[in-house]
Image (cartoon, rainbow, N blue to C red; front, side, top):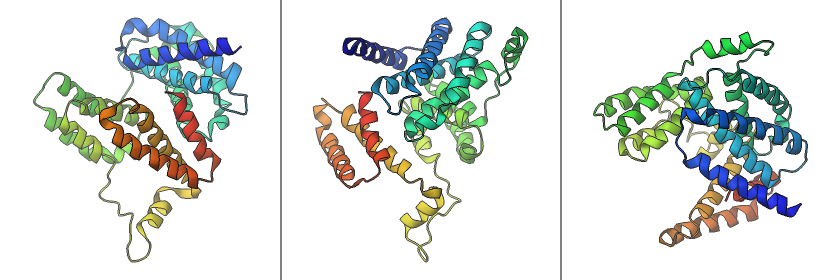
Length: 301
């Protein structure tokens, strides 16, 4: 059993690396659909009903996220027409996965992967029950209307990739859309930020805009005359005592820094600082959901 689990883990590691690196193209669609069905079947049959989150389940859901991300990109580019049988199967698996949403509530990062698959899967397959092929075909005929955030992020990326001089003008139109990040589709906005992040790797101008987008200058969260800044931030941004999610993300980020810089001697100092901060926080943390973030994050390395 242990050797079988080891082989599965190694296979998932290779698949994760491939999905992270390989370019997206239309020829991948049949394989991606097969992978999507396989991931959903495995998760709903083997993991979702268990009380503990296992390493294979973490990696499998990460694979599922990357697969559905590529399928969604293929859908936007018009390469996902047809495939009615696969969409029908996906729809059935997604209905089962939705029933286990509560199982992943203690793990915000894993829950995001599940919600991403459910949301994109609903778009890929159509939101209505699949009683006939005509319904599936109808879903194919409806073009995807992306919001302005995603559209301008794609334009920015295109300008960077092709050295187009109009990049400053495109970014100038993107900045006023920061309020849309809170009001419109989280899927479109999240994908847009990912695309802009890719552009920011090659463009300092895109990087500045990416860092500035989340800042809403019209909202003053601190009132020095009444509360401390931290108290006001907690009251305004983290309602219903959900602050453990912020600490969970902080632990996860520190683990990512520690593991991501492992073996990089040129940045060993930064890694040591992150490791010390992580140990200091875990020593004081009393919420088991937050301490679990360290174990879950280390699984992916």
